[in-house]
Length: 77
Image 1: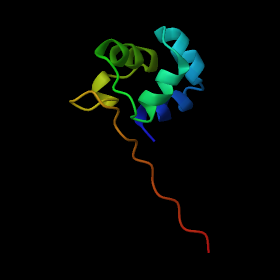
Image 2: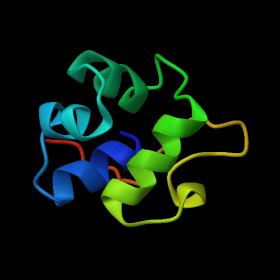
Image 3: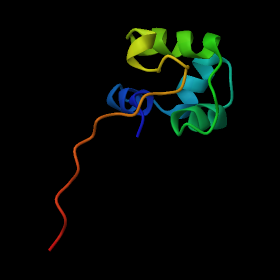
Image 4: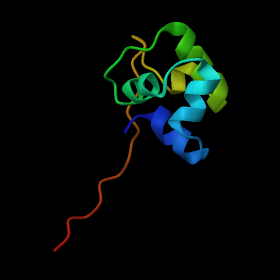
């Protein structure tokens, strides 16, 4: 899971709502969240604004979404 997906979910937003704010399709939001599509600088800046965090907290130096540090769950016995 990427940080942008985690923050979006924590804020209670859907991909459709974010897409509408950005003026793009929900599938683009999905692809960016899953690191299947490179987000253009304008989209990265807008996402950071929507989520209220610095762009560097969401994307690496190359512009790809950063992965969220989610702890592993214990294995079921």
